[in-house]
Length: 72
Length: 225
Image 1 (tube, rainbow over the protein chains, first blue to last red):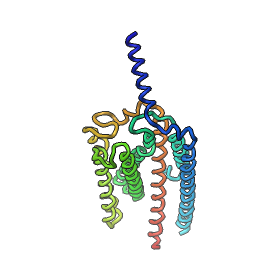
Image 2: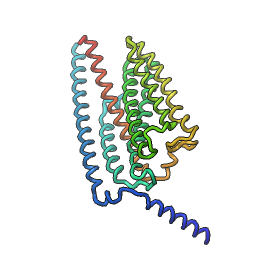
Image 3: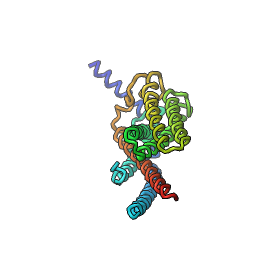
Image 4: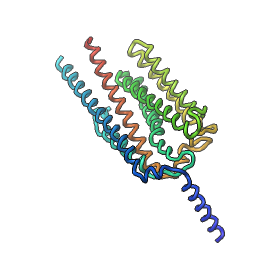
């Protein structure tokens, strides 16, 4: 019984310590984290689309080069 | 080799990174003192190093491939993989310095792992200087391939063995295996592993773009343009 109590107490105190650590809880509760995600997400998607377009352009160049090499 | 001409893994990288952004900022993380919310940097700073190691490993594999087969394409792949790998490493150093400034109190604390990774990057900088100083294609390819193997075999003990022999601020030091401190938390792993795969694939994507550009350059030079 005593052992169980000790374990419970230890768990509880651990929990209390964990809860007292300051995190951005209010910021999240206000929903402002979604603003951050929307901004970074827009940037990331923009850069990725740009990268895909560059990749495609490079592919076209390679195709032209291959056609030229086959002709000569 | 065939993977270079495929696109699915590029889209996979994009999907994973968008997942990492959303789950990484919204997901549950352990409430730890000092680290607080900055624990989320784990999804962005650490994958740089994982990506660097994976890219440099493939770079070394292609260096050996070049040495055994003398195909100049293998040399080109090797150098471009090393280029992007070191780029990720530099990003890793800078993101680490920002993170350290707010958790360890200074951007550079002379932490063994910090010092060792800086030395490792310097060894690879010498690789690029070595390449730049040689004119003949085959000679440059052969000498730098050998140097690549040496640089890689210096990097591995620098990053994975030496810092663990002493006390370090990094987790996993003082004799502990790498990820003990985080292993307990499955919430972190749920985002961390996809982050490693996503960032690494992005690194490979950049390397293949550089490799393909180089091939076009070579073809133009052969035509005397």
